[in-house]
Every structure is written in C-alpha cells, then in structure tokens.
Length: 181
Image (tube, rainbow, N blue to C red; front, top):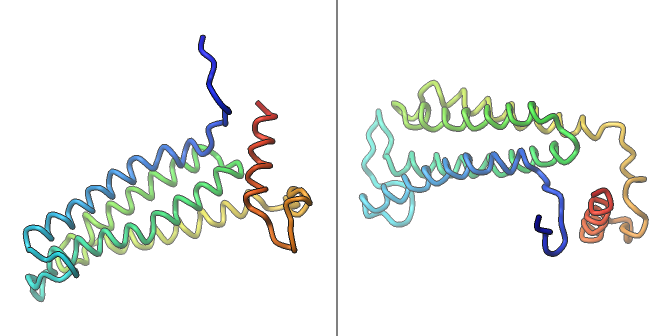
C-alpha cells in the first residue's frame, strides 16, 4: 500500500468536475467548426464570409455565433453548479441538471442555429432552457445557504476593513478540510 506524497486534499466538486469533460468536448467540436470554415473560406478575421443568402446564413457566421454563445453561457453555468455543489447540493439534482443543460446547448446549436434560417425549433428551446437552468440553479444554490449565518462562519481574522480576504478564507477552508480527514 502506498502513501500519498505531499498534502492530501479531498476531491472537491466531483460532479461539476465530471461534467467539464463533455462540455469541453462539445466546445472542441464548435471551435473546430469555426476553424474549418475560416480555413475553407480564407476568412481569418471576422465572422462573415459573404456566402449567405436571405434564407440561409453564412456558415462561418453561424459557427462563430454557436461557439460564442456556448462560451457566453457555460462558464457561468459551471460556476453556479460548483457553488451549489460546494454547499451540499444533491448529486442527482446536479447531475440531472448538468445533463439537461448539455442537451439544451446541443439542441440550441445543432437543431436551432444550424437549421433553416438559423431559427429551427432547437434554438428557442435551447435558449429558454439555458435561462431556466441559470435561474433555477442560482435559486437552488441560494436555497442551499438559506438560514446559514454567514458572518459567524468566517473567522474574524479573515475579515479586514469590512472586506473578506479570500486567500485567508481559502487557507482556513483547506485547514478545516485536512482536519476532517
């Protein structure tokens, strides 16, 4: 039996951490599409290759918007999920919600933006579903800390000039985590 070398830190955020892989894989796909269209259209800056029509948008523009839209929503969604998980969120709720979010983002792009006129059924479903996720998960995260006396949980030595010293808070949390092991 081998012993770990160095400071052992408990695994934090196993659910959010697990879902980073499929979200990142889909981001790679979206990014690859942008690069592919840029190379084939020889359009290395901007997002309009001038190949669209009234009924169909330019493929580079659609790929760029899909990529940007993903990047506008997913980082915040993962941060909110991490906050909920750190505050004791239910594993099934978090896993189900993150799985649904991935499906919504795929619907938004694959069955929405990439459809006729960039406005197929997946686009509004993906948009409103994502907004629902952000609002719902934020409310869930806030609910998880409801009733906790936050002021008494932060040691006085961490508060300086009525502001929280986050580095000292992180050190304190790691110290408490190592004591519980």
